[in-house]
Amino acid sequence: VQADVRRILKEAVERADSTNSWGSVSASMRGDLRRIAHGEIDWRSLLRQFVGSAWRSDRTTTIRRINKKHPGMMPGAHRDSRPKIAVFIDQSGSVGDGDLELFFSELAHLSARTDFWVYHFDTEVDDKSGTLWRRGSRVAPTRTRMGGTDFDAPTKWIADKKNFNGGSPWDGYIIMTDGGAPKPQRSRTKRAWVLCPNTDLYFGQPD
Image (tube, rainbow, N blue to C red; front, side, top):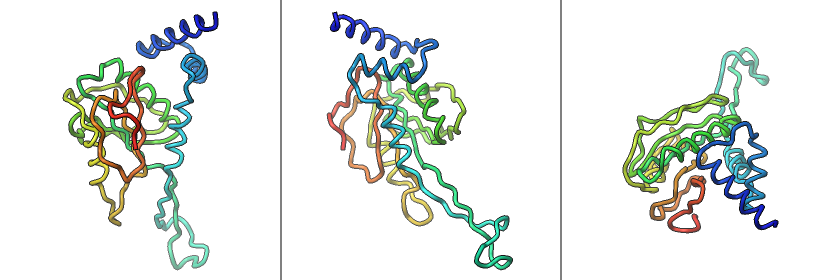
């Protein structure tokens, strides 16, 4: 009986995920049902941890703040702590519109915690698709690419970006995909993978 209940629950969860038909079921309850049905870890919690570990503190001077050591002589400092995260959405032909809707739905949950940049890619990154997804806002699902898939495209794109100090302006990036492409080169920047339901990375365990 327990096996039958788990099978029925698993089928219901997969159907709700694939058609985005959870209705009024809360996000926390969805996570509980997924863990019961699949015996999976809470990947949303891991994703939040990934974003939370990628915080940096930017220091800028401002005349609106008073320098405590030299008041009236030097401007004060303002520190802005925030994660520098980029999200790359696989828009190859194998990723259906329903999968894209799921990706954008999960990003809406992530935006409750922080701002991040979103880019589309297939065999190359679509720079024109770059969108700053601000905290608490919603972005409608869109498609700008329809080619193959090359995970080296976002990996090289991140590696090629340099700030004024010669370092990387990004603290981490997320690739949302169905996993159907060869293994990319190693990344010096933190990289996380988010996969469509019932898919896996073509090359197995990532670095």
